Image (tube, rainbow, N blue to C red; front, side, top):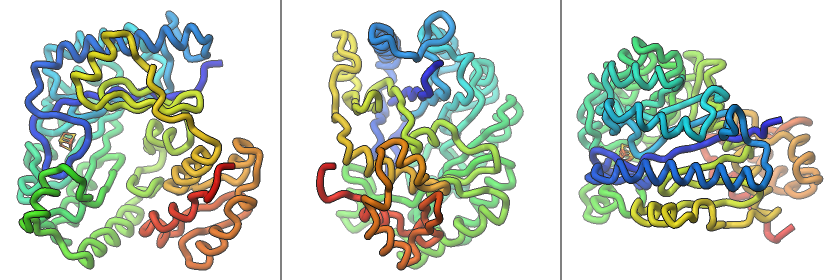
Length: 394
Ligand code: SF4
């Protein structure tokens, strides 16, 4: 039987760097797109060969890698020109059995798609589109350095629907400069009005090295107050479930049946292979991370070093902690039975005291089968996660 696993492919190019973004993505490096694809193809080929040499059960038709889910993220995968896309997908299909994939997602920036490109993407078997919208308000979009308007975002959703995408996710953000509750509400209403199936919502985080970080240090960044940001959070947490979007993970809401299978597998401890600069893999109790700088990544791959550097051998303790953090992010929470099956221990034996404290504080809900975050716990997740750190190695 083929092992359950996912593949993530990272495209590190963007038209312009958004002011809040610390992802491994770069603007102004379009000249590297072609050699990057060559490196990516070689990397996938090298890993395919390695897994074949180890006799791993990961192959489908024509001995190609057969993941359950495939996710092309970035960066902005849709910076690729429409004319280049057929070659790019040909390269992927050389090594990946796309037929076997049940969920094939691509991330897109509304400023980089049109009907023709979207139809082409759909024709390659991509069945889920994740659009980075962030807001439908032009003032907010300008303030965070996005390259598209609210109108273009709405148009991109409509064009994707016309192209045959029946599973569309939009990302929205709250706590943005110049954003008030009404603007957030209007953005949420716009997303709902467009009939998307999935909404991811993130609060703005100030990350080191970003434009916003610098502006903050210079005292030039005006953000909503903590009270207002909290009111935005409360609004989102209440309104989306009322409108039929179940909160299946801290930041993710979906109509029933439209939860992201790829992301869900990360939270469920399923192994994955990541290809491209900065991509992570979790495989055979080890974590790997590719170099984030495109040039270094390509050099490594061209020397035949794909999947060579183990970033971390996952210890039993780290595995348990991560298993708990990730499961707790989801509405399903930690399955007591699954924890016992994976680790041969009762979760209460290890975490009895923190569980009792968190239940008492109303942050954690417990029954015989599961442990999961309460609505309050969803809001203050970090407090809960900290309690699942273990003092010593197991
Ligand atoms: S488009 Fe996405 S990846 Fe690129 S800079 Fe903006 S937020 Fe970052």
